[in-house]
Image (cartoon, rainbow, N blue to C red; front, top):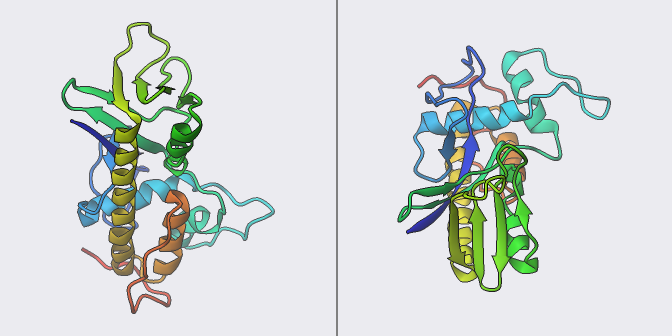
Length: 222
């Protein structure tokens, strides 16, 4: 059985305490779906915000002085957002996993659709690890590390890959709904803005914002 999952590469800033987050293995991957716990959603939102926590330049408003506003500033003000991760493919029959590479980002997940349509090789990294997707007619070959002649591979049909992409998109949409509800509890003063920002990351329509989350407020405690 082959599965595809949208994943975030995780890393927690030292001493993070703006909202509850799950303990995560540094540089491991967190699959995104509608099945996450509140603390896992918090960890995912933290990681996405941290990826975009960059000092403003002349085109963006100054960073707020409060800790929460400062940390969320890049997420809420960048037009083009980045999230370390991508789509992970696992063949459970062989134990081979095709991981996102260093040149990949969750925001680029739709590149897989373009890969299917035009057939051009799709690279996700560079030496020492270079994951590559290639199409040979109706067959897709995912090479875990093109730098190695003996690299493990996953082979599947184009039709199967299309189905996996549909599943991954559904997981992303379900995560958005879950994150909107999470933000209404833990970031009520920023719920609409955070929900819209996450939609820009995954390039899907934003879900409805829960009623009663406007205004400035502090995060709830668990």
